[in-house]
Image 1 (spheres, rainbow, N blue to C red):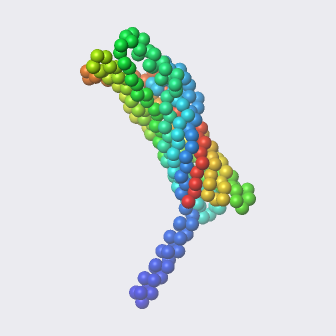
Image 2 (image 1 turned 90 degrees about the horizontal axis):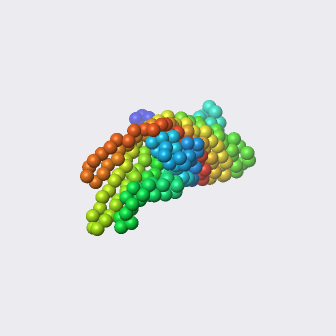
Image 3 (image 1 turned 180 degrees about the vertical axis):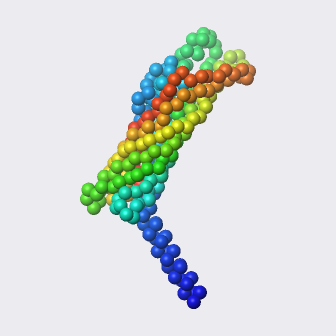
Length: 239
């Protein structure tokens, strides 16, 4: 009797597992993150700590879990996480380097720079709806809300003269904010996706500190709110 019960439970759990697995999909994707609005603005006087992001097109990597609702065909609950990096524009780099060189005003001093970049990690929950076009092609629309984690790497300037060196580092505090996404695309053969998303990654009043080699430190206050929005173009694969 116990053996029969065990076998019955095993069959039931196998059936449940297969049903759940059949309803679940997992997608990985790669693409580009194009800055929009203030995030793309090139006003270097307001860069990072003000309303201007001075950001360039960046790289996007991401993953999405889709759980199909059994009661509504082609509608799925989604959980996603993206990782994007946007470097700062060449205009920003040129103006920073020119400004410091003018301050030093000594051609014998060698200056080296390490420029910052933005990292955004939005983690979202949302919905995806597939619309059948033909047996091998679907159109999909999606949206989601969640939280974005933004960080900015350090800006470092190193001056060398007669065997001596001095370094100045500007570091920025990381921040979190509300994030939203809406988009769509085409799914080929139920596997390969080509998509576009508009990401609203939040508005931030970033602050930081300026630290010199002698450990002297100055706080950098926010000059205004920076809105981080990106238009993401990507190719993905669903398992």
